[in-house]
Image 1: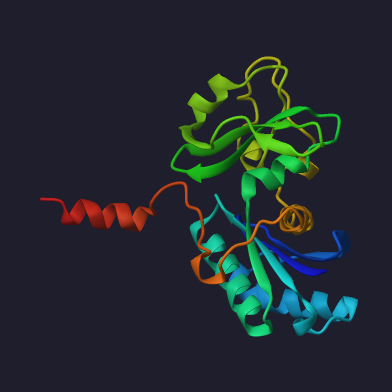
Image 2: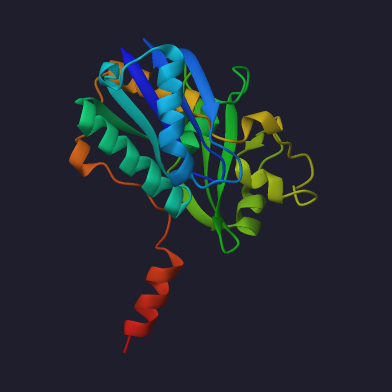
Length: 228
């Protein structure tokens, strides 16, 4: 099955194409430009690289959240529009799961977090099951960064884009995975989607929507103005 994967949950992004679960190509979105400006050209370019017509894509996978409000909206909207135009199916993939699955195979537990802005993170701990896939130990939570740091255990490495902000703040004994593994990649989005599709997961194109960890600042301001 030919699959197009999109990752736009943060300030960096990527696109990838896979066939039967095997990565054929991946490219990063142009640095310094917004996803809206670079995503469509990147999709066209990568399809041309592997010689696929858009109509050959049968599944479109996209990070569904948590992540940047703008990035998630752009990614999910693009995935739905592309899938609708070519008659493909679509799957949303949890961003934290993507990061967890980028941990080396010998890592049995990993604490993953994404910057939720305003001093918060969205975090979860993932455990590798008998089949080698990572499953959440508990639901993801929105926490203050200091609160999350206090939950970390020395035997569990951490990962995720927010780690870049934590220089000098990690509790004693806590280590981070290699920096190359922190940013979610479209290739991992695609591999997870291929696996989930193979075991029967399906998503209605019209109901697919981003997962946000909180309401946007604009929504909170509006609610504050509307309150009596």
